Amino acid sequence: MQDAPGRLVDGAPIAVIDIGSNSVRLVVYEKLSRSPTPIFNEKASCGLGRDVATTGRLNAEAVEKALVLLRRFRALCDRMAVGKLYVLATAAARDAANGPEFVARCADICRTDVQLLSGKREAQLSALGILSGVHRANGVVGDLGGGSLELADLHGHRIGSGVTFPLGGLALQDASGRSLKKADKIVKDALAKDPHLEHLKGRTFYAVGGTWRALARLHMFQRGYPLHVMHGYVIPAKEALEFCRLIRRVPVDTLSKIETVADVRRPLLPYGALVLEHIVRIGKPGNIFISAQGVREGLLYEELPEADQKVDPLIVAAAELNWLRSRSPRHGMELIDWTDAFMASSGIDETAEEKRLRHAACLLSDIGWRAHPDYRGEQSLNIIAHAAFIGVDHPGRAFLALSIFYRHVGLIDDDLSPRIRELVSTRLLDHARIIGAALRVAYLVSASMPDTLPGAPLTVTRGKLVLNLSGSLAELAGDRITSRLKSLGRLIGREAVVITG
Image 1 (cartoon, rainbow, N blue to C red):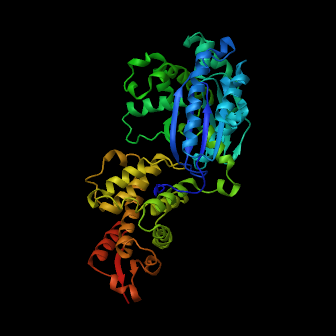
Image 2: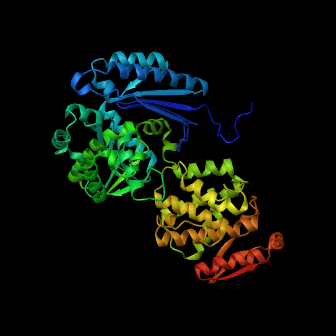
Image 3: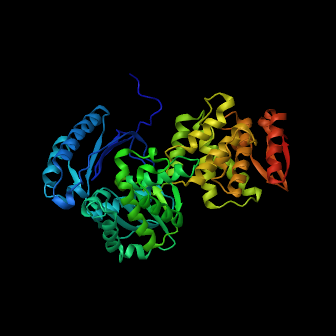
């Protein structure tokens, strides 16, 4: 059978099994990449860390459940022809007296070595995961698992030393005898003098881990947030503090939208809220950034050559979609240079971040062409807004989605949900309309084919918006192009002119 044409074939898939204190997960990625794309993701809650704090041992029933799951995961990796399998084990396995025996059995089943991560190593990999998935990260990374909390300072590409605390949800349940009051004192005493939190004031706290993602999902659905993408969801610190207090005060099953959180995760929500509350109280961050990137992605990032680590993951992901879905991937690349010249001559103020987003928009501009013409804008918007992109925040996602929506439907908002526009500033919305209008001109000139736009520059010259269709391109001129050019001209306050000779 022929390989799926929608896959990027560049070496064998790569997989990571993460044996955590609460859950065991397998993620298989398409390839080792600056923007890794999962092609399979499965987890099960095994509860390996339950009772370790009091008994000192992994629960026998949890161990057997995990081993059965690992046999399935190994078989799946064989079926998917995985080239490299990494197996990681964290707090429960390293803290339990029978941890070494369990790790050895895991290695036999997985047919590869198991990396038993120290607390500091786990903190480092979590920080690398944030470094991989967040553009210009600056703050403190906190990875809350079932057994432990890891903290590490991150500023640009500099990662400070990591520290670990036995403050995972299962560990806190166990150590406190399921008393939130006792758990509160345990957390407060543990974090009171941590130097990482002393340097957090006004910066971002990057929250990693399933319990915090569940809290964020509950917060997201309660407020009716329009974009259901977890990575990059930001909660102002004050609002996070109030929400954590609510989670501690109200019985979890009575909370609005609690059905969005898995049953097995709900009992851990108050403990995760308790830890986050103390982090906010002590560290006084500006925002809480929810990350879907963590230890697994940090490990893959570490495996990349140094040159690849420096590549922009958003541009990589956009280029891959351009390659897989566009009529001409090379045309998408030409759009970057074409719009560069237009923006440089226009006098429109554009920051480095806005330029970066525009480049991604050029690469994504034709991914919806196979849809019915009446729905290309809507489908492109949905694909882009909900894509598994990293290295972009939610306003950036909305800008990309809106730019391509306007590229297809024109500068009308009748079919556009007003909620998606709430995610962008007035400035970004204006830029999205300008980029969409410029792309509408480009695609009418080129018919989505390469080698035309380089000879048809769009510039602001002597105060006028000029599209040059001289020489062999003169026959491309027409009323529709002139109409679209005038629409762009009105947006930027310039008279539009088509030159054909």
